[in-house]
Amino acid sequence: MSPKDVKKTSISVRPLREGDDFSLVARYIYRSDDYIYPAWFGSEEIGARVIAEMIRRPTVYRKEHIKVAVSEGRIVGMVVSCVSPLRMTENDLEAAFSAAGLPCDERTHETFEDYYKEMCEEREGYYVANIFVAEGARRQGVATALLRDAVEGHPLCFLECVKENVDALRLYLQLGFSVEKEYSGACAVPCFKMVRSV
Image (cartoon, rainbow, N blue to C red; front, side, top):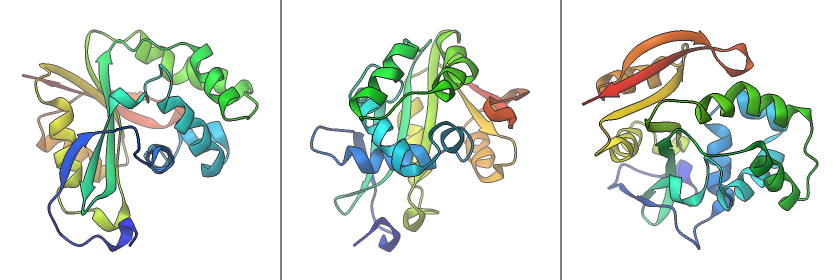
């Protein structure tokens, strides 16, 4: 049974573990952003291979930064979140490409400069980097459960939301985030920087 076949059922949120399908989680991370990852990797296949290696390395996507939503034993969603500022270098990204057996080109440098470098210079707090729910598991509270779990116990949290993603914006507002500023994000996509302070 695929995640598309998930019926309304109980959802549990837990840390990503060794033995979980890192390739599936890497695909979910890739699908969580329709702009950065296609421009950076060129295809989901390449992106998933590299991101799976990033899960094993000191990047924002390292295993310890990922929680998954599980329904009937299957991973149907994930959230990537971590303490800020992020401690990651461009060399960490290059090492993931090398481990995946793929060349690293100028797009990685541009992505690091346009996106990850800003995260490495962010204020102290807690950063929600990615959230994704498989199509068949949507509208069942999975995203809410993932985001609540991610921000619990963190007095200052922030994230970026693509301005035209009204469903995500609605969820973030419902969970106490507010728009701090609007800016042109990576790939020149209009985004909101959102903050939650408790």
